[in-house]
Image (tube, rainbow, N blue to C red; front, side, top):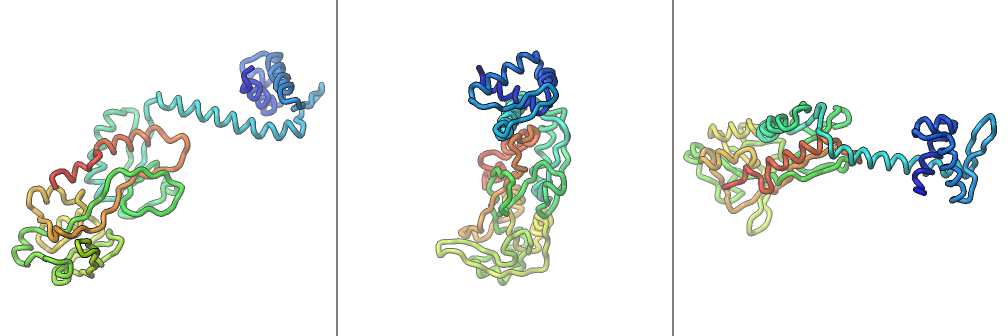
Length: 302
């Protein structure tokens, strides 16, 4: 006898309050349900139910055993749902939070193909310069860059986020390009709260890490605004390659301090730690990872 048959019969009798109701829920005859429970009791060597003509109740051993049975059946049901979900198409609304500049430049372009592939899905993207609570905002998924706080969220790495110091040729024509990190103190640097270390720029070379406090006439918490300011020749910017790859390739921006590397960070997808991860979340994270590539497409040729 399959022990799950006895467990299911016993649990349904307890849940339903009678053998007749349990038989109806299981699609079996009353005698079949009774036989399953009796064989289970015989196998265990204990009585699980007190049966009288008027009422049905669990024994002390039955109550303890029922708690385990309920968990087993819940796990079995979850396993069936997960296996079944693999065969279903994602549907519904997928709510995503993303950093404003990265979301606009690299998440949004991935959406049209995703929607064409999954016509039963709709996407709602909220762009924000700060981390928002997935639970409080009713979000399914967030794209985040940089260090993550400890949390129960599931984390998947999507790509590295490399920084580069750069300036427009017009700026470098008027101001001699810095040769050492310390030279940055003499330049108009575009400052931002996007960097975890603020205005203390950090660069690593052959002699190790050097920290330089910078300042300038322009500040923003938006990578696109900093890129525009750099392209207009206002000053030197320390920006992620995902924001300035194209102007670096065309020469509209030039890298400075080539021998020095700023600290890199990581781009992540984070989502609630649900054992039965939503198919729409899985589908989008996989799609975005494919769009970005193993080596980020924006870093090609840099």
